[in-house]
Image (cartoon, rainbow, N blue to C red; front, side, top):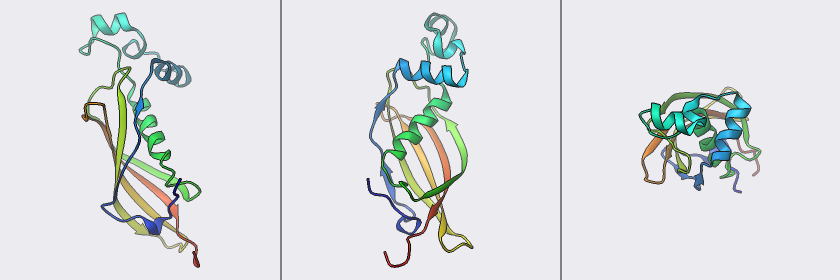
Length: 152
């Protein structure tokens, strides 16, 4: 892991995560935890016969969670993040199916100092792709991060 402070991020900088395959267990566990049992996500016969997709799809909130998990695995915010301030402009651009493999890319689009000299605001655009390199989700995330301590 290579944690970074607010001061170490530059606008235009891009990061690519590792990939992760969405399993049926992921979907069932998520749906159970969230209480989302729409047949679109958990009933193959229903999805096959009654949807435009012809099979079950992955819930959008799970795509978001997996994307953020892949981003966090980079370790950039390890002990430097103070808070998630917002998720904006989230769009699901294409369906994700059980068995799809996802990865995410994040680009720093804004940095802003705060009135408090020990922290700053970082805004990133996150785009999630499937194994065909098709965009499946896009969003802007805003974080508050620690600034690098003086003397480091």
